Amino acid sequence: MESGVDIEKLSVRIKEKVLLRGVSLHVKTGETHILMGPNGSGKTTLARAILGDKRYTVTDGKIEFNGADLLKLKPHERARLGIFVSFQEPVALQGVNTLSFLKTAYESVNSTKITTSEFKKIVGKYLEKVGLPESINERHVNEGFSGGEKKKFELLQLLLLKPKVAILDEIDTGLDLDAMKALSSTVNEMLPETGFLIITHSDRILKHIKPTLVNVMKDGSIIRSGGMELVEEIEKGGYKID
Ligand SMILES: Nc1ncnc2c1ncn2[C@@H]1O[C@H](COP(=O)(O)OP(=O)(O)OP(=O)(O)O)[C@@H](O)[C@H]1O
Ligand SMILES: [Mg+2]
Image (tube, rainbow, N blue to C red; front, top):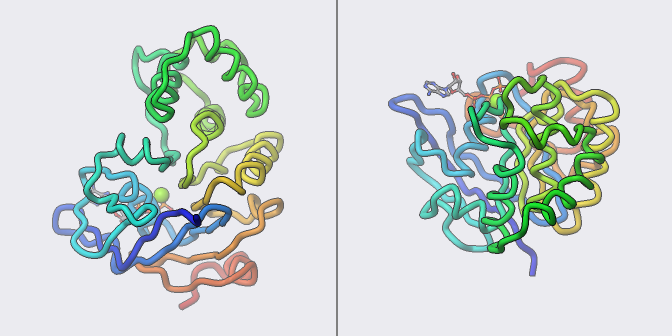
C-alpha cells in the first residue's frame, strides 16, 4: 500500500500570529518534495507542526499518516509511526551522551532492546558514511559540535531510524562536499522505503536528487509548485515570483 503524510489545508498560529494559511502537501513513500521560500515564510513552522510541537496551534486543516490523524498524537508517538524531522538548529543536550541518546531513539522507534555493544556496531557503520569520528560516541549531544557536525549528527539519526517520512529542515546548510554526497546518496538509497520533504535554500542538493515536486512557500502559503524550472527561476530572480 502506498503510504505517506497528507497535509490538507493546514493553518497554524503561535499566540495571535498566523504562520501557516491553508497549506496542502502530500508526501508519499518514494517521493522527494522540495520546499523553498524566503526567510520567515513558515517552512520550519510546517516541519514543527508535522512533528507536533506544542507551541504551535493548529487552527484548521489536517495532517494524516496513512489515513491516521497525526494531530491527535504526541511527538514521540508520531516518531514511532515513522515520522522524522531533522532540525534546522539542533540544540545541545547538556550531559546527554550521544550513544545513549541514539540508542534510546532507536529502541523506541523499533520497539526493541539492544545491547550497547551491538548498537555500537550499527552506529559505527553509519558514522563512517556520514563522516563523523567514533569519538563522537563519548561526547554529549551537539555540545561543542561544529555547524557541519550537528548536521551530520542529524543525518546519522536519519540513517539509524529509517523513517517512513523524513522532513529535513536545511540539513544541507554548512555541509562540506563529502557530507553533501553522503546526504544525497542516503536520500537516494532510502527512497524506495521513505518519502522526503526537503527544506532548502540551495539548488546544491538537487544536483544528485531528482525532485518529485518543488514547492515555494511565501507568507505561510504555498504559492507555486512545479519542477526544476521553478528552482532555476528562483536561482535567477530570487523570490520575486507569484
Ligand atoms: N515563538 C514565536 N513567536 C513569534 N513568532 C514566531 C515564533 N516562532 C516563529 N515565529 C515567526 O514565524 C515566522 C515563520 O518562521 P519559520 O521559522 O517557520 O520560517 P522559515 O521559513 O523556516 O525561515 P528560514 O528560511 O529563515 O529558516 C517568522 O516570521 C518567525 O519570526
Ligand atoms: Mg527555517
